[in-house]
Length: 106
Ligand SMILES: N=c1c2ncn([C@@H]3O[C@H](COP(=O)(O)OP(=O)(O)OP(=O)(O)O)[C@@H](O)[C@H]3O)c2ncn1[C@@H]1O[C@H](COP(=O)(O)O)[C@@H](O)[C@H]1O
Image (cartoon, rainbow, N blue to C red; front, side, top):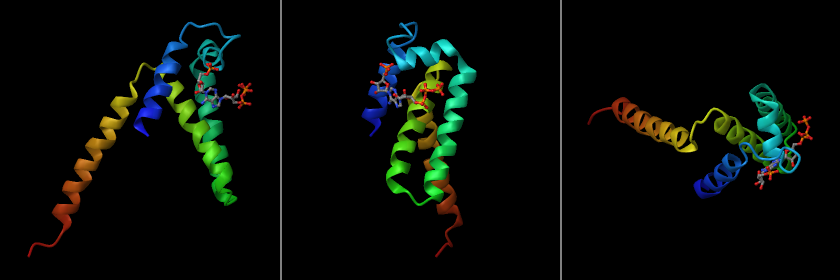
């Protein structure tokens, strides 16, 4: 899973400065951060609509669109995906500690 996202991130980063007429990602970069952010917001809403309609197949597609556009936004901000994953790892550690602390002592 992480390899898929990492490959996608590399492809997306390689599109910086590429010809917008030959690449959708290059077109997004050329249109700028507000457009990328708008697309991310739209895909999030579409994912929510699919979930509320209980449409599993559509949710998978919208979730892929969402992850794709999030990866473009992170690349535009020069934030490596690894940094986001490290934050999730850190939270896992923190919540693990919180769970242990909340457990009644024997
Ligand atoms: N995962 C995706 C991906 N998901 C969705 N899309 C594109 O996202 C667009 C979404 O369609 P919309 O109608 O919402 O957007 P739009 O037609 O541009 O309309 P606007 O709202 O922007 O005006 C479509 O053109 C899809 O092809 C993607 N385009 C590219 N990728 C990945 O990015 C890689 C690089 O793509 P290129 O830069 O095009 O080579 C590809 O190899 C893929 O792995």
